[in-house]
Amino acid sequence: MSEGKKAGSHAESASRARTGPDGPTTKRDPGRLQQDIERTREHLGRTVGQLAAKADVKAVARDRATELSERVKGKTERVRTQTAARAQGVRSQLAGKTTAARHRAQSVSDGRMARVREQVVAVGTTARETTPDQVRDVVAKGVAGARQRRVPLAVAVGVLVLALLLIRRRQGRR
Image 1 (cartoon, rainbow, N blue to C red):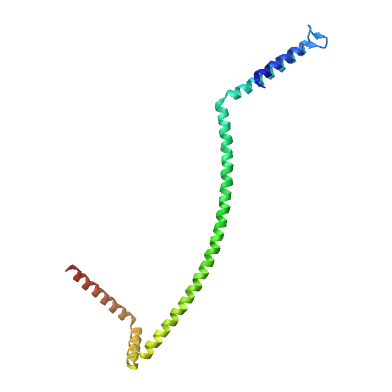
Image 2 (image 1 turned 60 degrees about the vertical axis):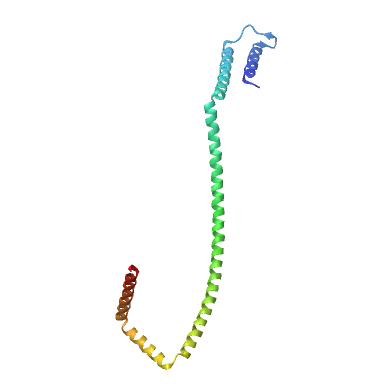
């Protein structure tokens, strides 16, 4: 029912109020009339307020925008919470898979390292067996001498490297 019809029906009920059980009353109590007037004023005030609220487009739009903003904030918070939970699950899965992959790589690496060691030992044993005793003695003396004179040997190697670099540089300019 529209506001205009409500106001009309109220006016009709007010006119019916003036009629008693025996028909229209000509004399009324002034206190009762005052109460009817106040009731009518209050009702009209509410009706005008409701009409004004509906006519205030800015306020309606602001209320709607606030409501939508609150809904979006709520949904955003839910999505943020769900995303954080999923990210934590992915991190846990990734950590488990990374640990498993690391263990597999380590075991493969250990196996390969063992094979390389075996091959080095085999080659070293073969080289030792085929090297004459005199050469082994000379190499052993050279290693012992190098261990005793590490600093002078390191300086000599450094000077040799520097000399080689200078020679290569001069050859490159020509």
